[in-house]
Length: 442
Ligand code: NAD
Image (tube, rainbow, N blue to C red; front, side, top):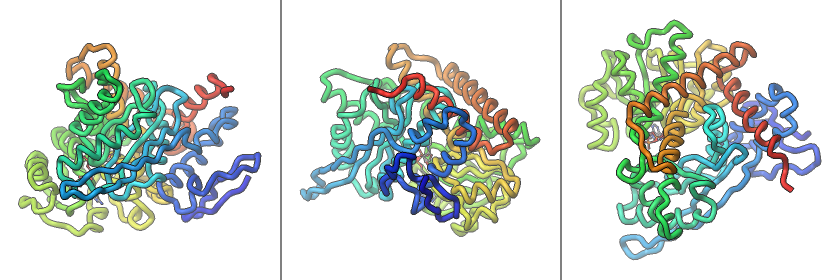
């Protein structure tokens, strides 16, 4: 088998035994998010037993679609945006995963995010494969009308592969309930029938689920509390630092603060703020809702971007973008526990550094699975047109997160591996068992 040496020096398998090398965009030479994912898969292969025979399935997306998204701008010019929808794996059910609007979105990033969705959905045992989508755009530069036209054209373009039983998008970075409503409406118009189950994360007035908006942050908080019990940490006394103060980071910060923890530092795209006595999280949320960033929040000190990673804290929650914790800053992190709210925030090198420093990492593929879990509830409610109470939803969410985390913790202890590798073992075993049972067509 050919191997290439990645930036971190890890050998990454890049070919199958029949001599058909993976094409360059599937290889990990630049160690972007897809390369990171491939390394994570390589780490789990030795634990897959006879299922390792199917492991190459995990290293290729099942289907990847690139679409041109042309729209007329308000000033009469025509702008073209590049959009993607990748279905990494559908062995266990329809594709499922968010849609990201960001100026740095690439096919490689969407591939990695789709693959992490396959792993995540299997880790919490919801009956989905993994998918992800995105548009390479800074949505802050668009008017509301431009944003709606772009969203609708993108939905129409990917309409050939999405659907309530095929692939169900959801919100991710810079997408929200309104965007899901436009996606649902566009798909429904093309189909000639209202199809609420085509996306999740919709407004509650449109087939959305109570508790969905808070679900990812609530899941982050839930696994944090469970892990804290194992390492003897009192969450009510903990100091917390959060990068990313959007849907995931903002809610997680709120829940930790409600539990008595002190949220001492928050960083977002606009700046970093610090207060040793604990930031007033509701006031900071209100400030961000008005100003768009934590920058300018009066009741805090401003700290430098790099200083955020050195903040004295017990729990660090990266909840923004990928590869934020890397070889450059992992040595300086003071937390005892890192809870990955974001997808792919820690590079494999940083993972090793954190492990060697005895810092517990709760990996994305379990820690931020709360969102997709309630998305699953939303999809089930849409199909049955019967809606549950918020208490019922939260109770089911917490139970699924606790059970999934306990299972992963037990595997990590038994096999003496990190929680990330343990989650991959649990999830990849489920995916490949389904693959094996289905067999190959034809
Ligand atoms: P969001 O758009 O609501 O918030 C993103 C936050 O990240 C904002 O506060 C933004 O200012 C900050 N940010 C952006 N660029 C930054 C930078 N360079 N440095 C520091 N901060 C930066 O997005 P979200 O839905 O909260 O998603 C955040 C992460 O969580 C992403 O990795 C996403 O894939 C992951 N995630 C989201 C969900 C969900 O249900 N929304 C579920 C699972 C995982």
